[in-house]
Amino acid sequence: MYKSALLCVANGTEEIEVVTIFDLLKRANIQVKMANVNGDDHTLMVICSYGLRLFSDARLVDLKEQFFDVIILPGGQRGSECFQRSSLLMEYINQMHLLGKLVAAICAAPVLVLQNYQIFKEAYMTSFPAFKNCIPKHRWIDQRVVYDAHYHLLTSQGPGTAIDFSLNIISLLCGKLKATEVASQLVLPKDVLNFDVCSTDNKEI
Figure (tube, rainbow, N blue to C red):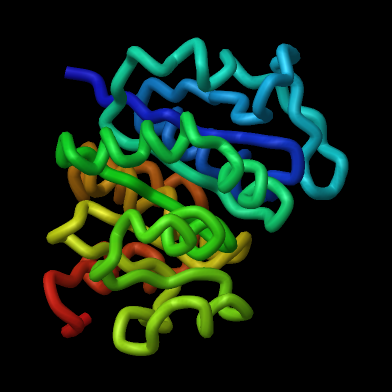
């Protein structure tokens, strides 16, 4: 059975992250829907943090009755602030969490969205390093990618970790074999292929 992903975007979303996530998940045959979270904006186009224009598949409000195997929040400070202002997105993330689905956030999104709304009050996470003081010291982990298995929460640090982040999403949804298959197409350093380093039920990673 195919896996599905809801990839949220907004004006100010980080280009490298959203394009990398979309590309790698599609390589793994994951069905990806890109949802515009720009409030009352009726257009499907978003302007990313450095001016790249992307067309989403639908507005988030039009997908609110659908559920996916993972919801993904790319970073970019302005894009994450837009996510933060969306009560619909917060409701959707909470519903995904209650259903035991994977929630994945990278860069500024773990702090400006998840930590800001205390959605995962006790989960271990990482974020863009400049935001680490916004997460309690005992919960912030300085790793490129962190997976808290208890909360089904995957977080990552920024544009330079977007490939690692995407491969870990694939590994969690489709298995390590599929993630390794996708990684083999990308000419990556060997340490990126270690899908165990991110996992934690406690702090021992």
